[in-house]
View 1 (tube, rainbow, N blue to C red):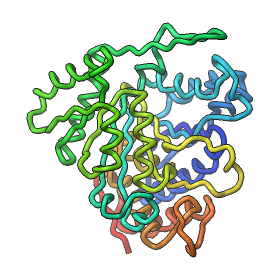
View 2 (view 1 turned 45 degrees about the vertical axis):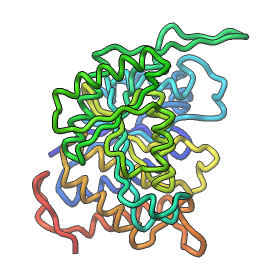
View 3 (view 1 turned 90 degrees about the vertical axis):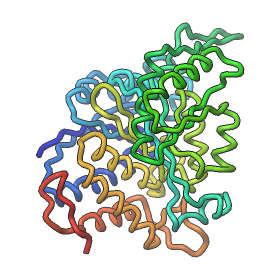
Length: 368
């Protein structure tokens, strides 16, 4: 089998962590005999430098022709005051719209070897395995009208029933394959848009009688994520709330550098670590590539329909962490610290050590 992946390294630490994700993808492709054609394209500040806009035409053409898109991160202090198409983040928003990816999946699980890394007590982290499903192409980030003058600014929050239903169905379907629970987040005691959100999710729940549904106001949901994280299975939320809550959930895992994401919708999937460009860390070899590598595993599972290959990558990550592989963000006192490249090499080595007859997505190699 042959697949084409458009690689958008982006800004800051993006190229570093994306490089390690590609290293691991190459290892698993060798294992299974897949052929992965990868090519890099500019986005964010790199896009502005190349073509004057955050999402250059060349990148647009490449992503719509690819089987999946692997993204690093966008953002640069040098363009902090940029506006319009020259704002790095505008490239990411435009990319999501271009691909029609409306459901952002952000899994959060706590590796047993990393419980001490989280600021929460270890017993509170027992059994934490949740999935955030965030609506990605609506809400305040895309609402019109919008604008700013010297003394005022406006952003408009808008959703319609169709936008809510399609992302809610993703959450319900995924819950069926997990623990069967959906926690829908809104602010229905204040916002009319949230009232529509709650009513739509409640109406849709009748199509999924095997799934338990609860509704939480976003402020209480934020508290529950810390006080009772193991009680949450699938967390369904609109765009802005999901952005905030998923970053909060990074506290559970111990570092944002560990968390992956998959953005799915009408066409090609977009896969990227949850963390940002972290410009202060760029070029120092200290960024954690696990989030990018785990995003590559999600690319295999959701983008290329290769679940067995995805599992091998996830097992490689887990084995490396269990053996004590640590970057600086997840290291405790006295532990050896790996560079970005060394962590990628460690995971890739464990993937490569998986042997067996691996001729397609249905073949399951054996670890030796």
